[in-house]
Image (cartoon, rainbow, N blue to C red; front, side, top):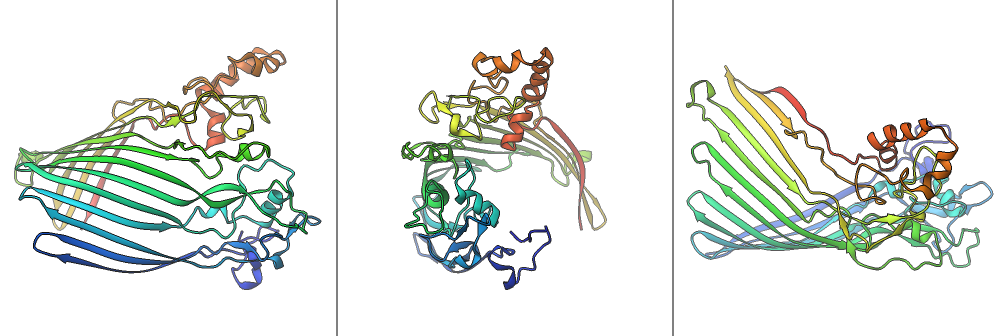
Length: 446
């Protein structure tokens, strides 16, 4: 997209055709009003979005213009998709129950673009998908609609002490139009499109419900505390758009429809923020000095213990079951297990210094103060972040080990187990969080 066959940038003009540079746009109009009555405050609004994804679609959807002879796409059989408009109402209500308590309620509808990378793919990628010769985990999308979220929340705030108040809010959030994989319907199919071709479509949903609690105190004897805790249950048929790629590869297997915990769900999540600060005219040298401690924690996310064969993996990659899911066989209900909890502490010390009309803020910031090894993910075969199960499973590694020297095992342990090279190459992320970092700096305002 945006480049010709020789790697030169296209100009973005009409002559570049359907595979020229894309120019998505989002234009919005909104009106809102705040109505204050004697015993209730009403916030009401209406927003209208005009979303032009500038993606491609087929002129005849039942006969996608796949050019089998040239292994490409006939651009005369494609056109730019229509612009989508969506109306989004918003409503908020708040009314006091006493001089210390407030009841509040909110509803809103929100729309956003789907992930642009699913639709912005060139003719070569489209031809590979429609040719049917390969297992395609990340295909292409055509004529996508916006993703829409409806959110409702109701809560109660109460000032239980002078200078201390809490708020508890229950919420539900339903998102529709999320991307998933589905077979295309090609009718008589005059262009010889492969019958087992899957593309991204708007067809999935997620549902999240939860409760959020917050506690805030005013500064007392230089100390202020802010506490937040959220419990969330998020469920859906797929956690990511291409979760069912391995299943669709087997045309005799039904498409999954079971609702399961989403793999990125953090059921318990919270923070405790303690801020101790001297004012401008107190503490002598410590004037304008502050110390902030941020404690954060969250439960792990769901995962599924799995087993399976080696698949199309090289000898140095192990039998990870993360990307080529055709070999992956669940050993328990989907999302039945959970990764470990994560506990973290950050420290920030700063001092404000006034030099004429210039204000300096010297600070020391230490993230992950105790240098904990936070486990963010695990290997599905073993359920931990330290052993992928390859070397310890003879039916997977025995043949390779018998045909290599002992150096193979040593290199595998160092490169893949200690440094997670194969996992990071596959997933683009690490199994562990960032170790302790120390930053010293000066901020300047004038």
